[in-house]
Amino acid sequence: METRLTFKDKAVVISPDQPFAVIGERINPTRRKKLAESMALGDFSVVQEDARKQVEAGAKILDVNAGIPGADEPALLRGAVQAVMEVAQVPLCFDSANPEALRAALEVYPGKALINSTTAEESMMGVVLPLAKQYGAAVIGVITDENGIPATPEARLGVARKLIARAADYGIPAEDMVIDCLALTVGADHKAGRVTLDSMARVRDELGVNMSLGASNVSFGLPDRKIINIAYLSLAIARGLTAAITDPTIPEIQTMLLACDLLMGRDEYAMRWIKSFRKRSQAVPA
Amino acid sequence: MDLTELYNSVIDGDAPQVQAGVKAALAQGTAAEVILNEGLIAAMNEVGRRYEEGEFYVPEMLVSARAMQAGLALLKPSLVESGVKAAGKIAIGTVKGDLHDIGKNLVAMMLEGAGYEVQDLGVDVPPQTFVDAVQGGAQVIGMSALLTTTMSNMKNTIQALNEAGIRNQVKVVIGGAPVTEDYSRQIGADAYSPDASSAVRTVRQLIG
Image (tube, rainbow over all chains, first blue to last red; front, top):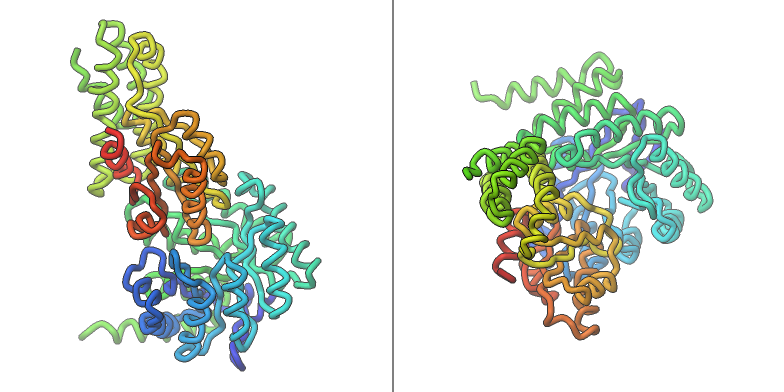
């Protein structure tokens, strides 16, 4: 299945047959003091710098989050989105649970955006899905509902089905739904990683939709997080993950994703791998 | 009796050893309160210190807390019998609309480890439930929110406490990834705490 996002005349396709789609996560003021302070003052220079760096590092899509406590989120998200569009020619992903903020961003966006996200709670789907339909956006559907996060892969598949069925009710096709099977913290429950991986395999086999993941959560509270995150992403890719909200400016992640593309048959003649190797080698001073 | 072994078993997160240690100490006539303070709580203080200094990781803190709880369960009848009261009563929960429970659970465990009576209200907790808990005797309420979009329910809960006329009977501590010291001041909480171990310190400062 292909999820096609656009920005003006630029298109990005998320699909098992395309290079892995990195959704750059850095434009998010949570726990980033400098970014939060500048954004709160309406200064989007750090936002623009993050946008540029992430695209340069290989981000196909940029996530934009403007959730600052006490601030006017619709105005801030719109401002951040406009600032990003000045410097980056890639599709955007609007990261908010505030429908007014989503609308404010969707209104000014020239293309087909991705909404991050809706849960399978009726109260959320009833607001986010009509917005997506109205503005022709795709949506990340997170598999949690009124009863929380299901414990088994079977139950998570059920919630994914519900998301896709409700989207269809609103006229949104399955290819415009990207499912997030939720990476939970293995530091708190050592089986959490496995349940998500098994859920992803089920979703891929039974529904065939694109999947995304906020992968860094998995390693919270543990040492050497980067290695855990990288291993987790590659295990997930083998189970049908086609996109991830992550930080492409971390060189190891960038390199690992290129290797995964090669191993999953998405890098013809290994050209992207070789090219990136040359670039990395040149970066090292002789 | 020397409680070093018990203390070390808590730090090692060895629940069966902790239970054996508690039983042995009780059998030798050590006061339940001494076992609690010098064996269990002192060990959890050390676990908290190691976590804050980056020596211990989350799973280690979890197994220690679980081992401590296993020991506490055995100790409880003796504590009740000898009239030892909990250090204070705390109600804790993740605010309405928010289902994240890991941080909240860690904080609850560390507070129990510090000798407090903890009432876990769960996740997606409406303001009224916090109000009820205060009316039920909680001296502190701890609120967690992991989403910028649910943080405002901390403010709503404080407002509900005001409306119920019981805000001055309770201390309010908040935490969670998007929460800041500034935000805590903005909404009129008593304190902000960045992690489970410092939450214990904060509560000690607030109610002793």
